[in-house]
Length: 100
Image 1 (tube, rainbow, N blue to C red):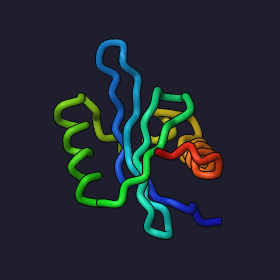
Image 2: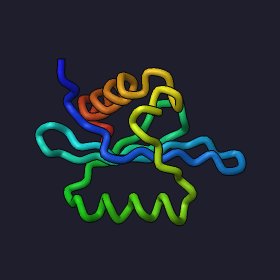
Image 3: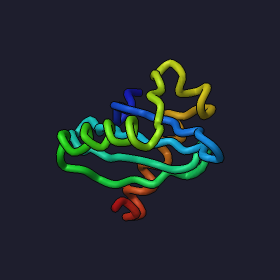
Image 4: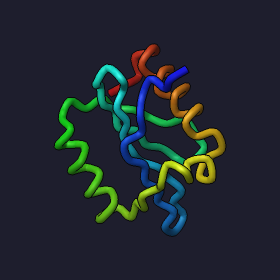
């Protein structure tokens, strides 16, 4: 079964006491969501309508906020079963109307 989305960018901030992830994904139907939260915990989601704004946020998070890009092959090292958990969190947030 094909994933209903693709993670376009994932960053991890582990400076000091931080242990957070931030990223964005695109659903197969074109909807775009950014997500954030503590590593291994339930993620929060916000729908975005502008690819430009997401890419701009991506740069800000990486440069100013200390997030390091995580390559797709390293997702499971960061969080076990990351893509499965993210799909569950995203779909639950959408279905329970908890997307900002």
